[in-house]
Length: 223
Image 1 (spheres, rainbow, N blue to C red):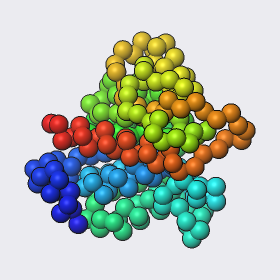
Image 2: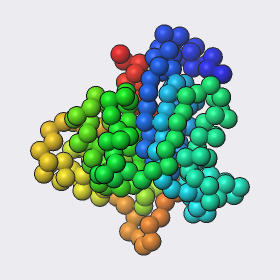
Image 3: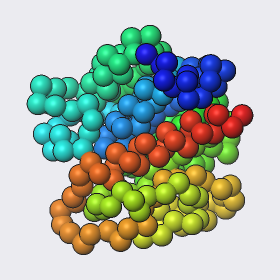
Image 4: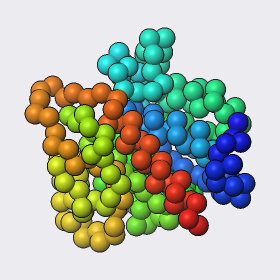
């Protein structure tokens, strides 16, 4: 199934993808598209973490959701989709909500890369902190709600983000913690739409997920 990928990057580089271990935290609007790209690009070892179940409101932007699986766990649905694409993939899933009490049970140096596609600010910050302790490379998705123009997304560092309220909070937390490391993120420079309640569609989250994987694939191919 990967003939065209191999034609593009070569067998040796494809083997690097097959050997890579990626942890994906969150399989919602951003994470579901990230998982799709990881699987279809030949990443061989994937772990996913998400505590949520599929709801009707997820159908407009989360890739593996459909009318038939509302109420099932996102991890289960995402894992089934991944294996339906590539039956040989090594994929594991954990239905758990990460917090300070348990995060180091799941985050360690066993992973080459971590994609942070979760919604919880404290977890996002802890992943940044732990990237100093462990050897994984982290790419974090910033805010994608209240935005509709995917062309405003970019791969950048946290300190260079703008018009991103979530990134602004994390910049302060990183500064207060005296973390000097350049932290890679996917962020949009688009001004958020002023609205209540929170609104989103699949245009921006999907591209954010693809950019997270693009960062990983291109980094693997450079080494």
